[in-house]
Amino acid sequence: MKEETISLGELLSILMRSKGTIISLTVIAALISFLVSSFIVQPTYEASTQVLVAPKQSEGTMLDNSQIQSSVTLVNTYRVIIQSPAILEQVQRNVNGSPMNISQLISVNSEQSSQVINIKVQHTNPVMATDIANEIGKVFSSEVPELMNVDNVKVLSAASVPMNPVKPNILLNTAIAAVLGFMLGVAWAFLKVVLDRRIKTEQDVESVLELPVLGSIPVIDRSEVRTSRKSAMEVKGERAHV
Image (tube, rainbow, N blue to C red; front, side, top):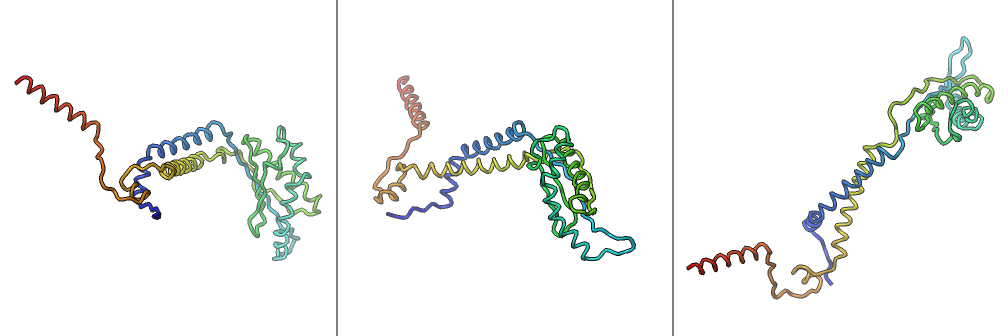
């Protein structure tokens, strides 16, 4: 059995024969994703606030590297405290209408070797996201002196009400769906050819059956047949008049 190979020209021919299906699947997938992202998925807003962990400085003394490094080291501890029930339960009580599980709405992070903690809150209500973020910063900065016996935390910047949602990303979702639809159309085009084992051409006889082609019957186009019949009838009519 000869090894079957497909040339670049044959690949392009397969794609061209199925271009209608490929384009249709691409457009349908993109349209569905756009409609779902625009009208079904509820938009999510993100509000953020920043907390500064400042090294404590005595009057008349200069800050040294050890004090700064100590504050940087405390950042990881403070990140855990922010997400603890000691802080979030109080935020829950202070913010009217806040969701039951605030921990699922917040993310706390900091840059490497940074004394600034970023607190981000995502919620479908932009005002609620802002209130929760600001309340977390306020409660945390007020509770730290009692929990850690230190007074080195300050709210660096308060959260403002976000105007634009962060999710869903309609453009990105539509683009991804279009690519997936295109890939599905291409896969369908190739599977259609691979699974079709019918012998249609002289090349199929030689490659599949490994037999020489002795002759072939040409395919006559229907339009040619109609034209030939019409011409024959016209000639016949002229002869009848004569």
